[in-house]
Image (cartoon, rainbow, N blue to C red; front, side):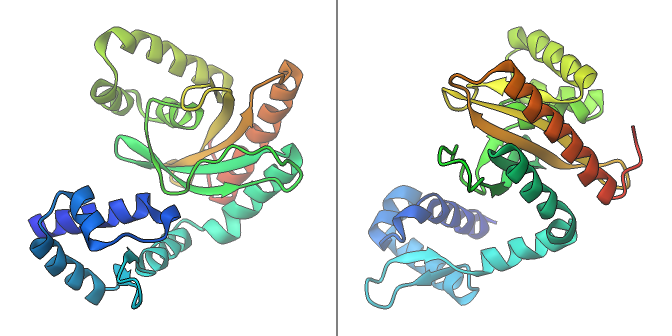
Length: 246
């Protein structure tokens, strides 16, 4: 079990440093807080499984392609390519903003897709694969509001101080009434987001579709336009996945 935990720590560190390209064994040792001898053994085992790769010239380490392979297989299990992505692309074209798909993962959600609009040079960049606590942002609150009350409360109790619980519960009730969530500057100052939850044929929540946009000088009329298109997209996605609810 300890070996598995250490391997996942290494993978997460490499994923967080993906923009830098790769890391040396000494850098990994520092970031993972592991002795070089222990780290070398784990890296050797991870290379054998395709989890990481080592550059033959620099001797630096980077993530292996197996993570992408597994991720693409997950896409297939949720009818992503054929049913969800075309709707996200359509929405991005209509609203000329960045569109996201987030998937629940315990007390967090994971951004698993981002479609940027070619017509809008000003973009909000949220990295694919990042985790966001379930109580932060429009997408996550849309998911929380759609969960059974007992389940949502269990999640909130682990994330939110007691004195903030009533305010969050009031926000979720408002989201249920209006059918969408909206947030302003909860993760990044100067940005806003609107979101809806989407469901499969069993009535299960499979994720949230959201639109991220820069909030400076944005009119209420434009936000209303974004919300209308988003709600329509959410309904189409859920219908394609077999959902027959309200």
